[in-house]
Image (cartoon, rainbow, N blue to C red):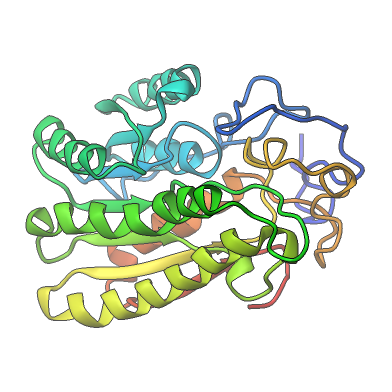
Length: 293
């Protein structure tokens, strides 16, 4: 059967079934339609053979798609995730192991400094080193007008989305040798911020600055730092954000007219980690369905 190559109709488009998950982190199993992480489609070619990767938020969504792709490209993969996401993490681990690669599960709360330290320490110990650091974990919630957000809620988003990447890199830096790669999950929200994601958009804009500054600093060490800026991607984060009609029409405003799937991000993360991108650092790669940065 000829695959559907039309980017407008390759995956489901709005309206999506109304659904809500009571809290974050969201889980994959209740989602309708189910996200595609590349389980049945990603084909590796050894582009990351022998690499060792740590992916935060690697249990589901974009993180799971990247973990599957990295394993099928020959990398051993450690994934960090919240303990509540154990079910999703185990499914991702199964995909890594089916690719005959080593998988490591690292439950913890990256909003805590101690867990950031332990996550990197255990990843390095279990994998025997570290070549790729994917800073992907994030949280978001729908916000009311006039910045009606509690200080605690803002600090939780900042701790997870901003402070944790700095701490994780701090711990990983001594282990990153020339040729290593750091990849940050930014967002189209850094460039086209939505008022109802005020604090989340702020963190993603800051991560772009983090990527540029770190790339300049790490160049002399031979460590490349880049970012991927996803557009509206169908992950558990979406039904757990608190939207109503906005979730039903999710991705409808893109030029391609639909939300993206996690599997459609994997190639960008593979490219940035691979030798094919050896002269790429400080870049922000958009995967946005046509939304401009």
